[in-house]
Image 1 (tube, rainbow, N blue to C red):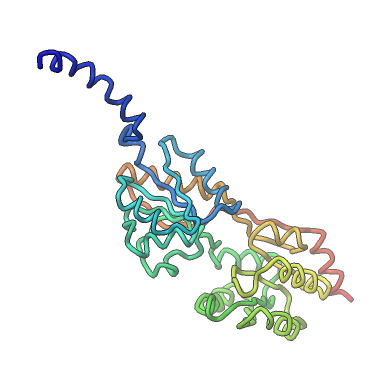
Image 2 (image 1 turned 120 degrees about the horizontal axis):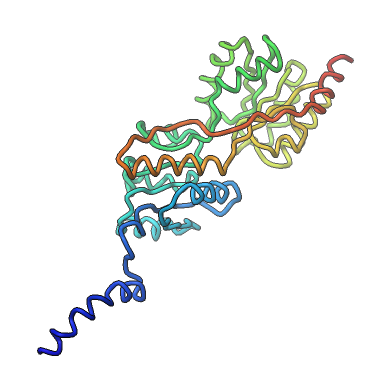
Length: 292
């Protein structure tokens, strides 16, 4: 018994090493921040890299990959003080109350307040605010420009209703072009094309695909209509302008929000960092077509 007591100090000094070997907690920091990534697509990974660059605490990174229940269980049994959700699938953890909204930072999600039907959320909204976009379009294309937009009513009907008045505030005329399936896109677009000055793209799963965007931008250009997109892909296809979100900077701003939560500070929902791209060559083609 005396020998066991004598060995106790030595055993206790080895306890941190044993925890490492056995996979136990290293420190409170090791689980301070967990990150759930919806999928391993490039924009999400860029945001994750920006988050990593902006933080000096260990991150526990979890990929959903169809394992929602497993990830949910791990978070529910873990001790993370802040959970960063990258992408809309990861945001389900907040909607399902597995992660309290007060501990969540939401990144790479379009209109998270609408998606989750919650207020007081923290994170970066992926949509560049429509008033900002319309103000820039009015400056570039002039007052009275007719702005066409293809959209699914089920996915974006409410958004378009609000956008019409915002466009009007800038002296623009929004021309809604609702479609209920991808097969309707070409017919609806071509019917409205003669009356348009600008084709404005918004994220919409019914409308947006690589092939459809390529066709729409090319056809618009041939008819003297300028296209406006929301990332660099549109510029590569011949768009005149794009409000391009910087995904790594989204992650870096997310890091600022994480630090604020960890220190007991506030954490608002803000707009994304972006840049306005302009394609002068495409703009000259549009002008040339209009002058004919």
